[in-house]
Length: 328
Ligand code: NAX
Image (cartoon, rainbow, N blue to C red; front, side, top):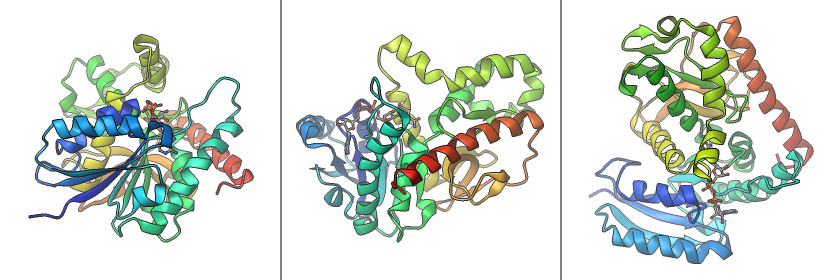
């Protein structure tokens, strides 16, 4: 039998954590035959709530759940971790400037990066969900010099899935017929969901839609502002859909993307498509054998170029800001 995979989840007592942990325990992260050990990290005030979630996980009687440990110390929580889902973050509260937000999150992601560097397993794969996700991932990565940079990723899969669903709806097609959609740039309102290379039921999506006004004025802003739409409707931010996207991200990274398709992941740029090296920016990627590769050679129209550059520009500004604050 296979040795259990250690999965560390931060922010385990939060609302995404609540949705995420049950999906992991049921085998949806790494496949139904892979046993997992959960290592939960919370702040001391939330440890009791995490213990409550652990009781419920026990009550799920999940055959592949090999154990649950709860920590309030990052070094312990990341020791031996094979997969790390960094969900816990400091949200922006009233009166907080962007620099305050970056600084508060630096206080979380710097020590977590150091803890990953110190004790995670050699095959560690990191997904940052907590916002500002791309820049938090950059902070953690820059404090883990012994871990290959490409193991640090941030989540744009929720944006990707949102875009797939909106496109399917527009063309009255099943979501399973949508392929090769791309989210470029930052997980923020500046992100660019690109349908020019996407296919719906084998047809080019942009041609099938044939409506640039819809694209520019409805689709792109709807996807980019979907988070706000959810808050407005639900009275709370996206949780189960975010957990679902985190499952999809790691699942595809480890087990591969479907033949003839790709997905979107925010990863350290190698300079492809003019994105400055080192920025953690979203790209179209294919995953195979536990590794991802940027899809190369896509033609970028003028319409797309300006939007990609704007979002990447925002990432470069965030990098400058955290540099100034001494966080990277
Ligand atoms: P919650 O506020 O419900 O939960 C966050 C949890 O993190 C809390 O239990 C808190 O105690 C814990 N936490 C705070 N600091 C910690 C630390 N240093 N170590 C360990 N745990 C810590 O937020 P939730 O709704 O679960 O969202 C979590 C994060 O995901 C937020 O930053 C949110 O903005 C972000 N999101 C990112 C998305 C993405 O697509 N990348 C989409 C969904 C979500 O908005």
